[in-house]
Structure formats: C-alpha cells, structure tokens
Image 1 (tube, rainbow over the protein chains, first blue to last red):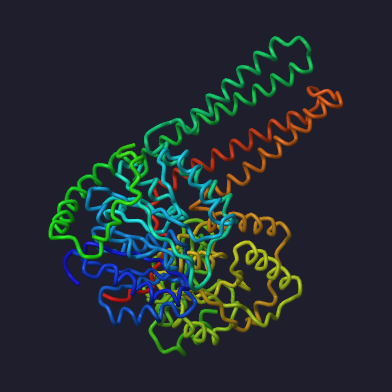
Image 2 (image 1 turned 120 degrees about the vertical axis):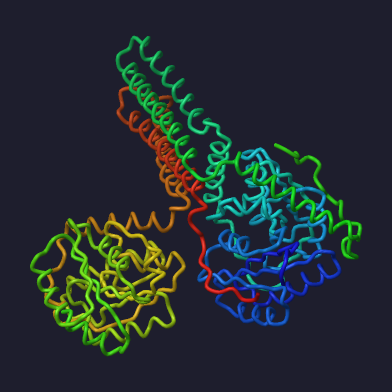
Length: 347
Length: 291
C-alpha cells in the first residue's frame, strides 16, 4: 500500500473480541465500490482477551488493515491519539469499537469533507442507550459544553467523526480530551458539519462507561474553557474574577469604613482585605498565564494558518476524486440528512 | 561486595561493565574502587561534586552506562550476587524487573515498615509492589533513558515505568544475610516517605489533569466555607446570634478564598499542560501489525 491513502478509519478497541470481525466486515462492505482508498487502523488499548489474535487473523487476510498495539490500557484519548499518529490517510474517521456506529455512514461523512468541511461529527439518531444513566447526562453535558465553548455540538459523545488530517495533527491529545475534540478544533477556525448517523444497541461485550464521571467531566470542561480563553489570547480567565473580587473588596471596605459599630466594621474590613488579596492573587495569575501561553508551543493563530495551508492541498485531491464519480454506496439519498445549518462556518 | 556481584554476573556469561556513582567525594571508597579496577574489571567510576541523592546517581549512572540492559544495585548488599542471573533472565518477557526480598530475614519492625509503605503506595496508586525499598532492579536501556528522576523518586521507579507503559514485573529473590543488621528507619523518615507518596500520586495520576486534583481540593474548601457561612447566617437570622463578632465568619471567608486560589492554580496548570502537551506522548506502542 504505497502512495497516499484517502481515508483512515481509526478504531480504538478494548476487549472487543466478538466485535472486531463484524466491524471489519462492515467497514470493508461500506467502503467497497467507493472512489476512496482506505486503511482500517485498529488501536488495541491493552486488551486482555482474544482481541489481538482476531485482529492478527484479519491483518493476515487483508493488507488494508493495520493494528497498533499499546503496551497497556491508556484510555480512549491516548488510543485515539496513537491512531491519528499512525494513520496515513488524508481524512481520519474515528469510530467506536463496539459496533454501535454504522460504517455505512462513513461515505456520508466523506462526502461532507469533500464539500469543504474540516470536521464532520455524527449525532446519534434513535440512540440505543439507557435513558437515565447515559442519555440524560449526555444531553446536559452537551448543553454545558456549548455554553463553555460557544460552539453547539449536538452529540459530542458520538464516536463517529471525520477530520481532515491536517486539522487534527497539530493538536495535543491527552487525558480525556478526545471528548472535546470537535469543540477544540472549531476554535481553531475549522468548519464543522453535523450529520445524523445510525446508532445500534450493543450486541457483544460490556460498555466501558458509567455515570461516575460527572466531576471529571465538569473539571475537564472548566479546564477547556481556560485553555480556549488563553489560547485566543484573552486574559479574561483570571482578570474577570480578579475584577469581581476587587469590586467586592471595594464594597466591603467602604461598608466597613462607614459602619459606626466597631465589631461588624472589623469583620467587613477583614473580609474586604481578604477579597483584595484574592483579587491581587488572581490578577498575578492572569499575568503568569500570559507568560505560560507565550512560552508554550501551541498558539491558535499559528495553528490556524498551518491548517489552512494543508486544507487547500487536500481539498483539491479529494474533490478531484469525487469528480471521478460517486460510488454506489453513497448515492442512497441519505447524504443531506440532518446537516445542521446552525453551526457557524467561522465562530 | 563488588566481588560477590561479579561472581554472579560472570555466571551469566555475557559481557558487562560496572558503573559506580559516588554521591559526593569519598576518598576511601574511591581508593577501594581503584583497587578493584586494577584487578582487571571494567569499572567506570563517576564521582559527583556534592551529594545529589540516590535518584540523581541512578540517572548519572544510566548516562554513563553503555549496556543494552541496565542493572541497578544498592550500595549495600540486599540480595546475594548468586541470585542476579535469575533476575536478568526474567527480563525476556518484560521491560523492567524489580527484585523483592523474600523471604525476609530481618526484624519485625523493618518488615512492618516495608509492608505499610508498600501497602499505602499500592492502595493509592492501584499497582501493588511488595518491596519498593529494594534497589535491585534490571531494565532495558530505553526504560532508563526515558525516566528522569529527582529527589527521592528512585523508590518509585517501578511505578513510574509502569505508568509510562513499560511492562514491569516483580520477582522474589532471597535476602542477603548482611542486609539483616541494617538499622530500621527513624520515625522522622516516615513523614518524608508520606510526603513522597503524596507527590508521586500527584505526579502519576494528575500531572496531565491538574484541575481534577486542585479542583477537588478547591471545591471542597469553598463548599466547606460556604456551608459554614450559611450556618452562621441562619443562626444570625433565626436565633439572633451575633454574626460579626464570631471568628468563624472569618474562617468561612478564608476557606472560600482558599478554594478560589486552589481552583485558579489548577486552571493555570491546565494551560501549562496544554501549551506543552505535544512534548509528551500519552501512549506507548509495543507493536504495529500490518504494513
């Protein structure tokens, strides 16, 4: 397999011995007859069952399949990052390894990328999951995320997404960041499309998620907000709270100063001084943040220009292939479903 | 001591070198080592200008070592040299093998210390080793190259290696008879060990997510402060207890302020990690199958 590959399907798997074979079949079927060359890249995130042996068997049969084995369980973000780093395609499609996504949706995503979007994320129509433990928290999280990032992503948790490789390569991926990837990417100026995708109930194996993540997700969202604000060069992260603390301190001090009664005045003055100290502390941290940002390797402005350069190039090749004629699979009339017009082209 | 180790190493039948790192200037030890060198053994001696601690010594030793496999040995005998071949042979199926002195021949107090320390580390970090105090470890060169150690972190080497994705295993080796007579640690050291554990927990579990750590502490503190304040206000309104002259109010305000500061520090940590996130790889690949 030499030369450029159009599409890398990246699938992190963890103990999915019953799912990998059907998944491979489904992806191969879905992309059969489409104009794109593809590779299917499994990332084994430290499986302890027969997953790796089954994957080996698939690789032996089909040269388009590759497997990256991680030395232990690193979590989905790290596995996704490993997949991205090893993928050779111009477009990277991520999918869950549990067969809940339908590979037949991949051509739809690809076509939207071909139309000029940088990121296409799916949202799960008729989601087949438990209502209270999965769907409701997920909806709350999506609302919160939209509020934090200013980009409305309908279903952040949907595993089926497509990225132009150039858009995603420079982004640091660690901890649980994969969840926020579309939001993070959108801030760099990428154009996002959202499309309804099929969602099926889990057939084999165990779900690896539960409700216990609330605090972590909340902390991560706050962190994301901090990263986005400073990344945009704004100093609001610390200076806004510093200002609030400063005003509070002013009020308390004034109240204490004019209060004739000695005891309450002491309390008001003491609290006022504490608030003033907090304001000073926060303002200092704000300056420190600017220093950190300026000395770091990641600046959104730089990243943006780099993105645009690579996009131009890939755009032409992909559109070229599209002009060769669409494959039979993606002429099934589902192409335009649910593309969300509300997503801004440039936030 | 070196003679004993050499007997064990000679038994493996593969070429080896010995790197001795002197933590500070020790003329007598240097003289003794020079005598060993004259016996025709491949010894490199590195002498540090002042004491930097064991972790730094291990780092320096690894830099000067030329072997594919690096075996670290403590400066006093912990396991008999004759057991070394077994340790090195075990490296076939792992990236790092740590020795565990078993059965222990020393006193009850030392054994209890070891058990408590290792148990605590095992509980907080989720990976149980039985004898982190044992300095007899063997690792592949790449492992040593990737771990940068400082302070008292050498003790946690197996855990750090494990978290970086290396395969670490533990094997039991007999304890050296001379190891028995070592004095047990004074209680002052226990406190330091405890602090070591806290810092290593932070390092391994929260380095990439500082806000989860500071956020938890900060929210806890702010919540406690808020609750305390609420209680005081309720008491003031319902029971007419004076609000202002109670120091508890100041405590409540202080707790809230502390909470804000902790969260703020967590946030700045996040920005630091993100802007430098491309420098560290969050995963380790053992194998790529396929072309």
